[in-house]
Length: 247
Image (cartoon, rainbow, N blue to C red):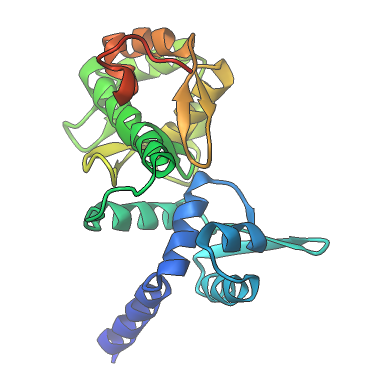
């Protein structure tokens, strides 16, 4: 009986994401913001009434949380674990068979693949590079599972990121998150979120359209120095062979 009940519950959860519109809503909400039902309807190209029905199912299923302000209904992913679930599933989904049909779509896709937010931490090529560079520098270690090292505490202190509040967080301090474009891990957990915020606060990165993140002119060299990597490694794909990245 227990196995049957658990199976039904899992199937019910899977059914919530088995619809392209609902799955698209969850992917859009990986930017970490709260969206109105109307904004999500426009992003998916569906009628507001259709979006409302889908959102009600996602809220009742525990994947989204909602709040109302006046006439507006705002929704967001319920918590970081839901973002992890969505990103992990996206990382295991097959790549789109057809290339983008327009230059605008291709540019947007390239921007997301380069750097984006995965709920509240960095993803894309820059997110994976950050993950790997912190391992190379000894900030993180895999000897007993991914963990922050004493040298990493000193590195974070120099960067202006206090560690104790992160250790006290309810979520894991550090965690691998499979990147759906790079197909390799980027850094999640409380530390991944803190570094994403810190880079934005320092002006090293800035938000682009939707989930996209870009390096600022000053941020590229500063981040390269902090991570001890070649600045050319941080350049967007279109500019890697033609010169420094432009913001």
